Image (cartoon, rainbow, N blue to C red; front, side):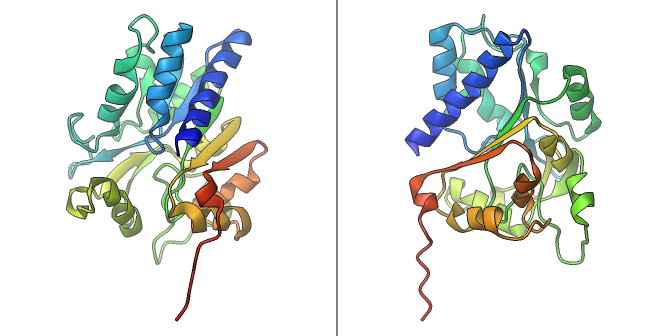
Length: 253
C-alpha cells in the first residue's frame, strides 16, 4: 500500500512538471480514495519548490446532505475537508493552488465543471480508484429498472445522484462499519468528463478490489461495471497492489 501511494504521488507530480515543461499548467481530476498519496505529494512539492498556483485540481465528488447541498466542510466525511487537511494545508503558502483552482463539483451548478474544463483546453489526466461495484468517482451502475445503452452511460455528465447500497456499505468500513453516517446523496464528475481526459491513471489498494479489477479488465463492457469503460480509452492505466493482483481465495462448501 505504501509503495502504491508513493507511485501515485510521483505520477501526479510528473504530470504537473511535464505540463510546465510544455509551457502550460496542468488540469487534473483527483480522488479522495486512494488518499495516502496527498501528504507525500505535498512534501515533494515543498521540497522541490514547485509552484502549483495555477495548477487546477478538480475533485471527483463530494457527499451531500438531505437538501442536496455539500455536507459541511467540518463533517468527518467531507472530501473538501480532507483535501485541506491532507494536502492544501500542508503546502507552502507560496506554492499552493489558488483557491479558485481547487474545484469540486457543485450540486447547484454541475455544468461549471465542464465549463472550466473547456476554458483549460481539456483535462490532462484523471486519477482515481474503483468502487466495489465498479464505479469510478460516484458514477454508480444503474439500479434495477434503470436502462442505459453503452453510449448513453458514457455520456453522463457531472450530476447529483443517489449512492447505491453497495457503495454506502463498503465506504462505512472507513468509519468502523457505522453505515448510518454515510450520506445517501452525492455529486460527481461524470463519465463524460472522465473519459474525455487525455490520460486515465487509476489505482487499487484495497484487498476487496481483487475481484472487481478482474471484471474491469476481463468482463463485459457494460454500465454495470463503469470502470470497464477504461478499455475504450486510448491511454488508460490501472496500477494495483500485489495483494489485489492475487487471485481471490474462493472456497465453495
